[in-house]
Length: 176
Image (tube, rainbow, N blue to C red):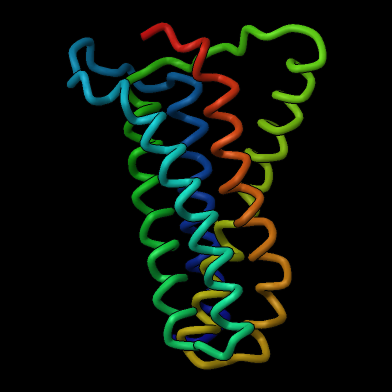
C-alpha cells in the first residue's frame, strides 16, 4: 500500500470514528432500555486505560532515547492496542448511557471545560497522526516517523493524561 493510499485510509477511519462519537453523544440512535450493569464501570476503566497509556508512552520515549528499538515498538503497540480498546469501550458506554453534565461552579468549572474541550479537539486530531506515525514506524521510514511523532507523541500523551483528569473531575456527578 502506498503512503498516499494509507493516508486516505487513516483519514477515513478517523472521520468514521469522529462521526460515530458525535452520533452517540447526540443520542441520534435510541439505546436499549436494559443493559448490563458493567456499563456503569466503563468510565473508571477508561481512566485506567488512559493512565496506563500515558505511562507506557513515557516509557516508550525513554526506550527509544536509550536505543531500545524493540522495546519502543512493543510499548507503542501496547499503547495502540489499549487505545483501540478504550475507543471500543468509550463508544459502547456512550451508546448506552446519556452524557453526564458537570456540576462544578466557579474556577473549577472553567478549568474542567478547558481540559475537556482541548481533550476532545486533540483526541480528534491525534488519531490520524497516530495511524500515520505507526505506518512510518512499522515500515521502517524512520526519518518520516521521527518528523510526525514530534506532533503525535505530545498530543497523544496530553489526550491520555487529560482523559484521566476529565474522569476525576466528572465522576462525582455521575448519577449511578
